[in-house]
Amino acid sequence: MQEYTWFFSLKNELKLEQKEALEKDFATFTAQWQTHGTPVDGLVSIKYDRFIIAQASPTVARPSGCSIDSLKRGITQILQHHQLKTLDNGYVFYRNEEGQIDEVHFRELPQYVDGGRLTASTIVLDHSLSQTDDLGKWEMPLQATWLKRFLN
Figure 1 (cartoon, helix red, strand yellow):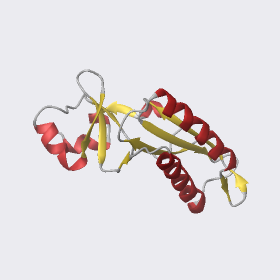
Figure 2 (cartoon, helix red, strand yellow):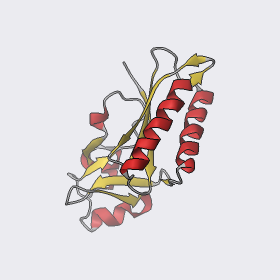
Figure 3 (tube, rainbow, N blue to C red):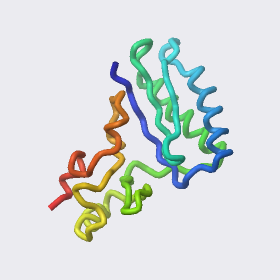
Figure 4 (cartoon, rainbow, N blue to C red):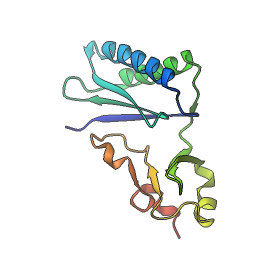
């Protein structure tokens, strides 16, 4: 079964109480999420205290433009309610030498590669995945993603 996936990146890591409050609000949202009056089989989860991952299974009702808009609007409103800021899609996330998640703006990628901060084997979190039920493909070596074009 192919899932539809959306990623939201938080500017800062969540504290435990923030994470617990968000999980409750996301559960409430997904319980009422619909497409053309039909409930969407959806799940919103938090990964690494920094990323919001929304997934919808098309088995019950395939998400449409309006339901996708309501998902994005709903998550944005929940995050704003908790005074949490997101980063725009111009950021690329990777694991640094210590294994911690770091980010770089897309415009700075060539300098990071040229300077050796990012290499072919650097693990990146590929937010370009939009239809996957295998989040194991989310963290991949840079050379196995669309970012490989920045390698020399």
